[in-house]
Length: 104
Image (cartoon, rainbow, N blue to C red; front, side):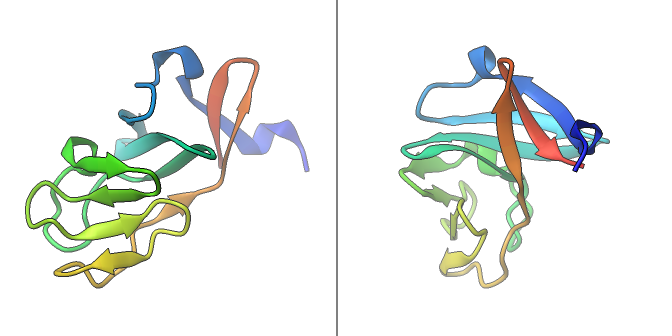
C-alpha cells in the first residue's frame, strides 16, 4: 500500500493532551482523541442528535455527547450509552513525522 493513501489531518503537537481536538476533512467535522492507548479519529457528530462530540466529556475510551449524554467507544464507534443506539464512523489513523493521518 502506498503512502498516498494517507491524508494529513492535524499536527500531533496541536492535539489537546488527553482530550479531544477538532479537525476537518473535505468539510466533514472529525474528532481526534488523545487516548490512553494512542490516537483515535471518529466523525465529530453524535449519531443520535447531531451534536459536536468535540464538546463532549471524554474519559479513557468513551466520549459522551454534550446534548443528551449518549456515549460512544472511540475504538470501534459503537454506541454504549442511551439514547444513542447507532455507531459513529471510525477512521483508520496513524502518526507519521509529527502528523496525525487518516486513511483516504
